[in-house]
Amino acid sequence: MEEDNWSRFEATCRQCRKCPLCETRTQVVIGRGEPHRVPVLLVGEGPGEQEDLQGKAFVGRAGQLLDLLLESLRFEPTDWYIANIVKCRPPGNREPSDEEAAACLPWLRWQVKTLRPAILVCLGRTAARHLVDKDIRITAARGQWVERQGFLILPTWHPAAVLRDPAKKSDLWLDMEKVRLKLDELRREGKYV
Ligand code: URA
Image (cartoon, rainbow, N blue to C red; front, top):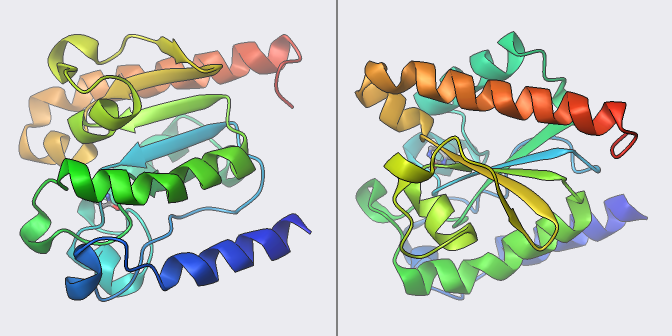
């Protein structure tokens, strides 16, 4: 039943024309992962060139780095789902405007409601701005847990920022290790299966 709902959601979302990004996209990028309940939802900014072409989130270089990290921290594919603030590629990979994000966020909210994660990871400033605080400073906020509406949220660097500046790599690793430890803790306490 849940899968029927998800398929209907995908079909509707793929027709979305709520903002101008629909004019330039190749494909709507719903996310990546199994659409079942997951403990961890990672949220990026918006699809890049590869994602727009392949129709899946984080399949370019940033995604490969993230996959490596998730694997090395022993996350199972059933532990996470990954999506973006906007589902269509902003031209030239610019940051999505607030209007574009506002038009798109109801789709992400539906995904959150359906996937019921305990932990949200904001990959980069854009995700943190829209999910935590419009004035957030990612340099100060990264690695610090915040709680919003029952979700544990951890802002961290976007993997693309790590590719541009390898000095950030150990921060991203440490932050994702915190996510690993928090998930283990929730499971130990019986708060998450
Ligand atoms: N960067 C993002 O923010 N999202 C993707 O899906 C790929 C790169």
